[in-house]
Length: 250
Image (tube, rainbow, N blue to C red):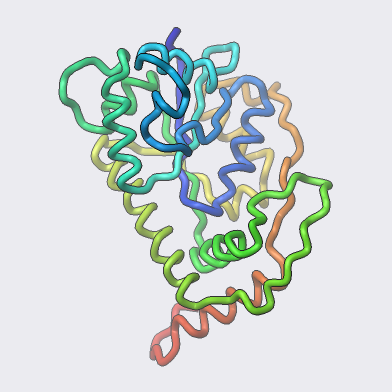
C-alpha cells in the first residue's frame, strides 16, 4: 500500500545526512530514510524484482514505518538522477502521462515533503570529503575506536578544489529541481544540526506533522571525524585558493 506521508532528505556529501537519517529512524515514527537509490538506476536488477509494481511495493516496505510514513535520503548527481527518474516513471503510482520530474517524484512518493541538508562552509565540506576518500573512514559509530591512517602526505589542492566545485554544482542541481516544482524545502544546516541535535530532529518532526513532543530520539549514532588534519587542510586550502586575491573572502 502507498505511504500516507513521504519525504526526501536531499544532500551533497559530508553534510551530516547519515547522522540525521539515523536520528529520524530512531524515533520509530518518521520512516526509514536511508539512501535507497544509492545504487545503479536499473532498480529492477538491483532489487531483483520482476515488475515495477512489485518494485514499488518493495520500496514502500523498505522506507516505511508502521504509521505509513516513508523516508528516503538522496544525493543529486547526473546522469544518475535523470536515469532514476525514467525508471520511476514506470511505477504504477506515476501514471502514464509525460510529466515534469518533480511531478514524477511526488506521484511516486505521495503527500511529499522536501528537506534540504546542506553545509554553509563548503571549504570544510570539501576537506571532509577528500579526507574520507583518502582514509576510507566515512562514518564511525559512537563509542567505537577510529582507524589510524597516516594522511600526512595526502593533501591535494586539486582534489579538494574539485570537490569544492562538485558540491556546489550538486547543490545547484537540487535547487533547480526545487525551482522546477515551486518547492520550498525545509533547510537544515550541518553547523546548526551538530550544535542542536535533538532540537533539529524535533523541528523536522514538526515539519512532517508528527508528534515531536513525545518522540524518543536516540543519542547521536556517529562520532565527529573532524580533527587537526581537517583544520590544517582547511587553512592550507583557503590560503592557496585565494592566492593573489586583493579582496579575500576568508
